[in-house]
Length: 147
Image 1 (cartoon, rainbow, N blue to C red):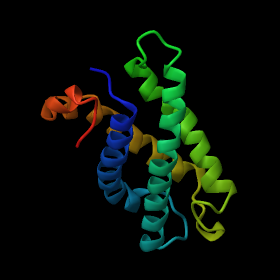
Image 2 (image 1 turned 120 degrees about the vertical axis):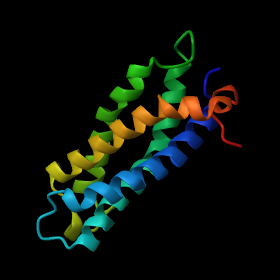
Image 3 (image 1 turned 135 degrees about the vertical axis):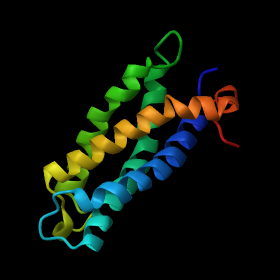
């Protein structure tokens, strides 16, 4: 069964929130954050994560619209992985060149942003497309919805 729009949004919010927080807790002390304290570094990584989750809901709406032009109304699994590029580029613009996500004094370096975003996305993608499908086997038959 194909995930519904509602199911994809729920999966993105819940899984990226849980997995992203776990990844952020582990990698934040290792990121090249320059003169930021550890508390400020966590504020940056968790703010980027929250922004990614919220903007991701808007991406899901766009992806759903584009999928309506495909015969099977779904993306190949690799497309789900490659969306990292466009979502990461938009988040970088929002994080670095606006104060929507973070105040100007806390803008991360490109290196720190890329490490966090890429590691989080890869771990998220691997878990959602691997162990999550095994552990929550009924989740797939409910269109990806958790409730």
